[in-house]
Length: 295
Image (cartoon, rainbow, N blue to C red; front, side):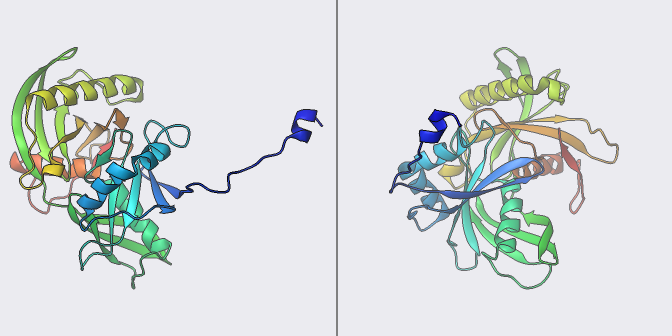
């Protein structure tokens, strides 16, 4: 045996913070859930808890999201006790840039997690959950078989069209037509053909570049103001819309959010915002079902 390895002994500190997590994904989009080791997170509301965490424990976020434990597209969630009497639990979300206000893929994964681990106990094959999220109450429904959650749906907070048919000159791109809508978070929406982009893997880096440029340009020129909550008043990402590959689907899209992260899922909050746009344009009707796929 090599002398170096024979003589080497490993020692570990007797004290220090130990954080335990479980990694999940929804449609390929990661979610790292903190399961143990968090200090007390003070606050009466989930927004207060998120603010307290940001001010006192942001090193936990960076430690879990950044290399070497995380990666450029890592995403995380903190579970808290419920903040309202009718809720089952609370949660807020984190990523490489900071904290987001709503996340559809996280709601799906969290629903499966809390039910299958027994963290939340519910009877029946279609249990329903009420979740306190930064954007408001989320109503989640699980469809289970033999105690395994096979499918999840959720009712999001109210979505709305914020700005319609806008234009902006974006450095390095040119004139860009866009809408802004809210689905738990604010997004700027553009069409791939207008940007001369293809929603394919070969244009991955270009999609990130364009998404960031557009978000920064719009954020600089347009005020983003939530109707009643200042902590929700910021532009979260850019969603680029393209034609579907399957004629039975409505469309595809790719979301570039935070600091250049690419969503592997369709982006639940973004799809909710898109529904508001399409409804405002009379392109879909109430109770109509559409299928939007990730790029």
